[in-house]
Amino acid sequence: MALQCPAPEAVIFCYVSDTVGPEYQFLLQAVYDRFREHAAWPLARQLEIELEDELDPLGGLQQVCFAIGSDKVRCWSSYDAGGVCQLRLAGFLECGGAEDDVNRFLGAVRYCAKKYRDAKGAPVTVSAGEFVAELRYSELEARRVGLMLLDATDLWTTATQPPNTWPSFTPGPLARSMKDVASLRGYFDLVKEDEERQRAAALARTKDRPAPARKKPKQQKQKAYDVFISYAYEDKEAVARPLADALRESLTVWYDDFALRVGDSLRREIERGLARSRYGVVILSPNFFKKEWPQKELDGLTAREVEGRKVILPVWHQIDAQAIRRVAPSLADKVAARTSQGIDAVAAQVLDAVTEREPDPSLEAASHASPASPPVRGSVSTSAALAAQRRLDVYDKLLELVHEATGRIVHLYGMRRGPLYEDWSIEQLAKHMTDLGFPGKTHAAILGAWNTDRRAALKELRETARQGEIAEADRALGQASNFLLAKAPYITKPIAAKTREAFTPLKEILSNAMFPDPGGKGHLITGWSEAAAARVEELAELMRAELAGEVG
Image: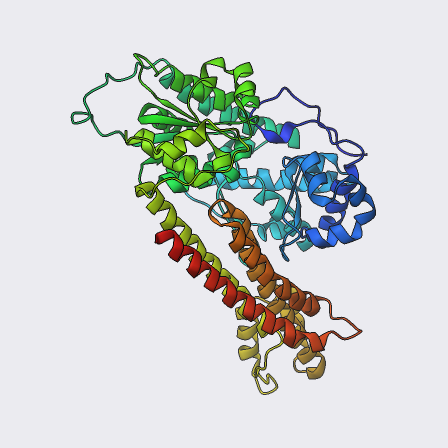
């Protein structure tokens, strides 16, 4: 029997959505079963193969994950060799047999709360490895709880997960309230109450505050922020974050990831941001109008639009005028930027409004076009130059990550001379394995067998080192793939397509290293390696040509 979580009224927190339909339940259960067995999230491409009979009739893995909702499951692309399917905390409530893991998670939360309270406000770090000694969890259980805590982002201010080591966390102020938490629903309620309390206090102080008198531009006092970005959480990665990155090149931007620092009060920072921002960039979307607190931020900005002063700069995302008119008629007639034009075009329009420049006519015309209209390229301006510089930075980083992944993967089958090991002392061997991040049990087993069964110890040593190299190569390819997805607004389709072409032979090499084919594909490795090198060189040439044309 799966844990039950009655659906509360709709609020800002995405993890209280309705129960998953029975036709999709199998995927959550499959992800949990593999998580429970291996203390790791399953690879997306592995699930696509193992569950293809169930997934394909429903539209595939990504479509099923979309139907379930990102509040319960998060799935990376199967084109990413390291892409995984991750069960969110709310997803555990839908899985049979998850009660023990949920209870261990709650025990770890109470442990973090005690450490935070005992420190009396001083910074304190908790490692998931402590759960073995302090809470009597097995290593497998502690690793599972560590992965669950990584999703409890409201609980900690920083978290780290170095390769082959325990994840560690620095509990934040919310941990103080978690000392007696007894259920996952209770955890969610405490998170919600804290968020609502801080936002309500901030908005109450700013909503009715009169707007400062408008002054002549030369006499206007410099504000702390040029723009405040208001958005729904679901639109953060696709719109809010890349837009904030684009605007901060020329403006001072209040955006939570920029403005909040460890130890800051969310209430005070929102209050300060709303009160001291000249404009509010409001990302209007279907998600925005489902949330309570983004609309309260909008109310606070609307109250400042007095005497004809423009404060709200709307950005339409996956929404049209008709839909906005139904829920917010006063916003439907405002000239708005549209994300269908691209993030660079939106940033240029916001920059024009804030700096009181004459808007680019091509962008102004595009803002009245339908959401499906293709973006219109405007004249070269300061904002266009900034966009070109951002694209250059993104391409530099992408090429660096692709080179890193290519080097590590091709190296798996390259000619190299490794250590002989046989003449090493125990101290040398122990240091070498520590540097490579060998798991504790493997580290101890090899040391224990070194003087009694040298042959077996050497075999285990070389196999573990090999698996470490494969894991690092997989991680490097995953980083490049994730960067390609995360920076999609800045990467043109030809560059993205050429990058994926470069990934194809690398994935073949990596797959052969992970799962050697008894039929023998070794003769193909050289061809794949040469193809990968050629694709990377073609990618670099295409980037240079594109950037030269953009600058010219």
